[in-house]
Image (tube, rainbow, N blue to C red; front, side, top):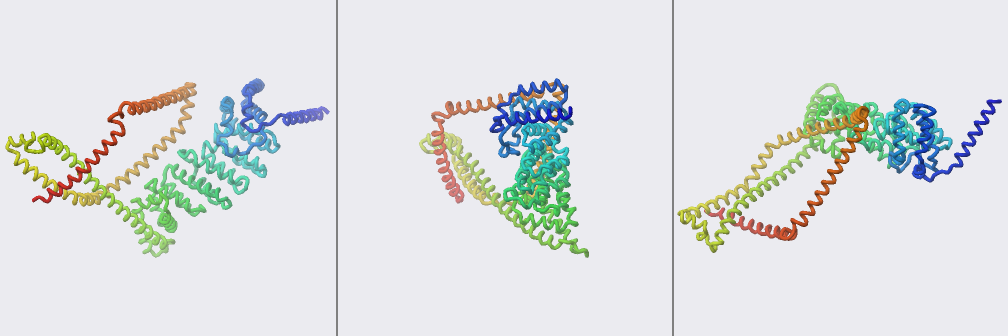
Length: 608
């Protein structure tokens, strides 16, 4: 009887609680519900829980979740928060509440947080299935995933069973995918694992496909400087999943294709040794439905690391057919990376090498699969390379001609300045003497010294030979310049290629250092915080304030300088209008002198 009475009391209490919940009003949207939150009530609740359950972190986390579930009652909520930022809803909750949740999660420890995360997933599905308030679960799940993304991928097998249980309830299933996918926005490796194990099995279902495709595209599009720490088998499995979805609509198919290229690109650039990645991709061309994605990755490897050419050369004898298909792709492709590859000196050397290998294989008694196709494609690619070389040679010739013309113009400018300065001084002296050189100070001085006739003859002779020399230079300098360019060209090309290789190595080294700094900075900050609490924050605040002060000072200085030059310098005779007029007059006078100079050169060049 006592047990029956206790059961009746519990049933009565449950009914009363349900009535209270039903009577409590619901908010129009989540933002309105968050504005109505009273954080002091939550703190009082947590204080009471801590008094009853001393240092029980799980009870503290449960208390926060229960409080948020109770207070955040909304009419209808999109399970995946479409058209909202990735950090929503955690990004819009009050700052004080964020700090309280973050502090509680940090104090709980990794093991407790992992347990509570898995428990919250189950409770989220259960409460949504019973149409109970559940937004507190989502906020806490997102907060825990942001603090430690790895917890989203630690129990994928268990969570896959949970997803299967609620797969037919799309709002519950999408909420589970959303919660498990939150870690991927902080760590792409976690996101890829969750996508492959949790989301791919439901990608063909109409209610899930859009979110699943958009998710993989989103996590691969951001944090591109972060290296992917996935194995080659994981990479090939994920790429295979991306390229075998035949039921996708056109928009989703485009997103899948972009995501596939992003995955290949990031995998290649994340590899510690690009030549090993090249070998892996080359041996798995047939494994992927869309082989052009593997070709895309192979071309990236070849342009990134010269060692890949040696790797390809070593693979050729046993992979003649695959090489023929890759060369055919290179010949027919017009992408920027392919065009860059076709112009690479190492590619030309590789073509010559495999042509020799083809001759050896053709003389052997053993029939080699794909040898004929390889020889045919090789000839086509070599023709394309030769055509491009001819175009490059013509372009270089045009550039050389322009360079020669530029040299002539520079020489002419120097001559113009020299003759102009000397002639100007003598002309001014002659002008002051009434226009007669013999009566000028220069002429009188030379006459008194008995040098005037000799100077006049020397001047005439100088003008004559200078004019003839100028004519000769104008005709022959471009020819010698072209010959020099052809002789030095290969060495210049080699220097450019070596500089590119050196630059790529330096860039990769800086990228690795940057990644190491990004990975180790939180560890160093935590270490400093442990022994000097508050120091990292003070350093960050000081750096921020210093940068703000420097930026403000620079902007003000620039504005004051502009105002000073505008009001104090560029006025009166130095105003923009007067400067423009003076420039136009000078330009006209220079053109007149240039014409007169050419006439004089032609005249004196004919003097015997």
